[in-house]
Every structure is written in structure tokens, then in C-alpha cells.
Amino acid sequence: MEPGETIIRVESLTAGYEGNAILQNVSFDVRRGEVFVILGGSGCGKTTLLKHMIGLLPPLGGHVYIDGADIVTAEGDARQAILRKFGVMYQSGALFGSMTLLENVRLPLEVFTRLDLSQMDLIARMKLALVGLVQFTGHLPAEISGGMQKRAAIARAMALDPQILFLDEPSAGLDPITSAELDALVRRLADNLGVTFVIVTHELASIYAIADRVIMLDKRVKGIIAEGDPRRLRDESADPYVHQFFHREAEVAPA
Image (cartoon, rainbow, N blue to C red; front, side, top):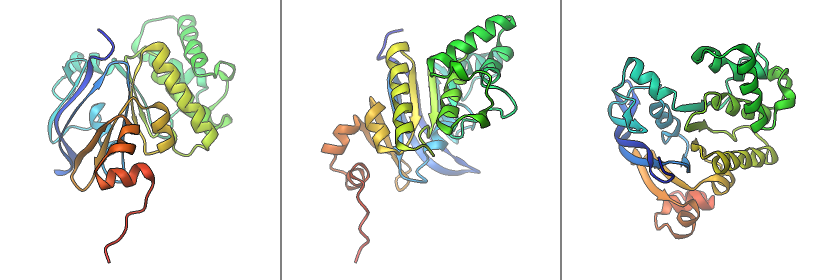
């Protein structure tokens, strides 16, 4: 596999709940090794799209291919093989509060491998070291900051060496300095390890700092209204809503 080739393909995806479509006929691809950002205003379907991409929700129509395999139709061992190709960091971090950071990161190894405890501990420590938390292995989530919890959640998502990491609103609830540190971590992991990132966010500073390419969703059209380098979209887009979003301009109500 070569960097730059398609690793995720979303094809004619219609997504929603109880038969009500939030996104209609959405198609795009994600290239291997890039930091790909899904952005847009509140209620446009960013997290809904992410949940469909990782197989948490069945689509109303369409397909999601992960490294060539369709997660929508796969079952049994074939589906498990697809799920092993990616890790997920949820918005809250979703760490187990009664487990230390080491135990949280070790958990996927306990479930999905036959390694002995010393091997699993070594791998968990290595993953925590990658995110700058190796000195906090014995801490509980409540004993560390919110930013550190997000980094620990990324370490757990990397436990099984996935090709892809999905991050849902990683900067949510963080102060600007902590958010910038998390952005730098994402960029470093992408550049040094070749991990493909798919990130949901609407934080402009983070988007400019980390994104190779973005898609912008709009709830009015239930789909994508812009795609490309966020700096070019900011400077060159002729779409009024795209311009407003990237320039943080309020929408003017009709007289």
C-alpha cells in the first residue's frame, strides 16, 4: 500500500435515524496517511457520518469501504477484520474510570490478542509514551486533566496498531493551549507513523493546524458543499456559507 491511495471510500451514503435522512447520497474518499477533517455547523451530521463510517449505525443507503472491504455488508469474521483496521477516540475520551491508564490502554490487547501480561504492559507503556503519558500509567482518569484523558484515549485507540484513527471532537472542552498541544500530537503521529486520521471538528484553529484536506457538510443540502485544502476554501470559495464559516462571520438575517 502506498501513501496517497484511497483507504476509505464512502459511496452514495444516506444516513439518518428512524428513516429520517440527515445526509443524502454523500460520496468522498480518504487517502492513506492524510489528516482528513469533517467539518460544518451544528446539526449538519458530522458525528452521524462518523458513526456510520465506523459501523456503529447502519445506513439508510450506500456503502462505506475500509481498505477495500464494505463495513455495511460485512458480517462475522469479515466484519471483525475490518474493525481491527481502525481505532476510535470518542469526544469524552470514554476511559473506564475504575481502571488506570495502563489498564485502559491494555484492555484491547487483553480482548483481541493472546499476548502474556508482560508483553501487553510493554505495548501499553509504548503507546502511552507516544502520547507523552508514560509517567502516568498508574493514574486513574479522574486524577489527570481533560487534555491528558484525550491523549490516553488516543493511546488506547492505537493499542492494536490500526491503520486509521477516528477522532470525534478531540478539542472539545479544552483550553487553547491544551488544544494546540493535542493538534501537535495528531500531526506528529500522522507524519511519523503514517496513520490516517479522520477527525470531526469545527474548531478553525485546529483545522488549519492539522488538516491536509476537509469536507464541509451543510444541513440545508444534507450533504457536502465544499472539499479541499481548508486554507484555499477560506481564501477562494465563492460559496457564501463556506466564506462565513471560515471567516467566522455571522449570518445576516433578511430585512
